[in-house]
Image (cartoon, rainbow, N blue to C red; front, side):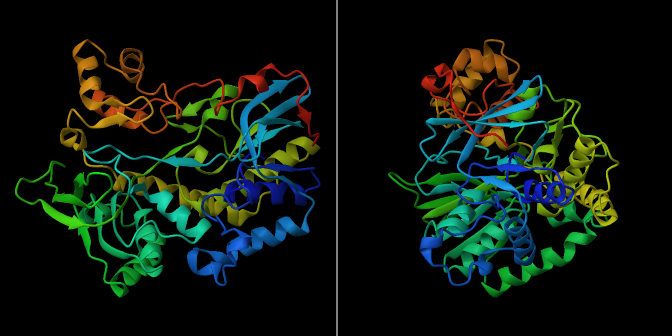
Length: 448
């Protein structure tokens, strides 16, 4: 199992309960993933549950892991999964420095690699003090640190709600929650989102209790400051998704937590040759990919939240165990029902929340788009004038996407500026690997 978030944990526990030897591999120091990220033990958090949603679910997963025989390998950064005659070899780098190699051998593999945030550029977004919404949440959950004293939370998507309420509860003054989607768009999907209404009402009550202003159908058009963030300009959006002239207002802040949704993490799946459905890994009713011996669950198969990841992980773990033992899969009926219901809700959420249709019009030519290679929007637009019409051609002409993150951050922005849909990149390696590791013939071996 690669990934110790909700999907990976649920899969590991389900497979282990059915008599299969399970090794759970994750890059973090402790299991839990982003959703159940825990503060370091040395911080002495007295009430870590105050920072978490569905704490009891985490306790059940944690206690099940402790009571079972799952072998957990943390601080293992997987960079490749190799098919071998008797199964698979998972290649990883150890520890925070990621210099020492390790291998894990398995007959089958489950990919629970999660997703990553999308942030669309705007003038000033590279200033110190501008962080991703998930980054602000990770600081709070994992380090008990708030990123600033006065924050604006902006962008689009349901992640903004727990980020704004979490910062406010931790003592940060949240100047505004700026959401580009309007309530009338959510109303179109009210029936499919019925299960989410109690959760949404809870966040609304917390925003009201902390007196956080909510600006719907608004967007950040510019971040201000010299050596760090001092404020942002926000503006209202018209029905066509364009900024309405004359509606700009300035909000003083030292932190901007911004996000525009998430994308599935599919690097390992693509390197194995798994088929994609759009931007997500395609799976069947048992969560199997089209590559024999490979399963996938959670955000890698489509952004849907922790509850859906738990259901998919359980179903995948049951299926993998059954296939290894030559028996019929026996997932809990409740998990099957939950998966269907939550997938419908996830599809509705994805349709309801979307970035402004014309966000690229607010990106000035001097705005950096690819931060790794310092490629500006003007350079990308010049590539379009030269005939580029897709991400790959822009990359070849400008180096956008050739840096450390390999396009994970800038790819949606480049695609938006080019007027094309984002496309997944096929990378032979899922993360940077030292040449010395690739040259070694006898890496440290950890048999499963």
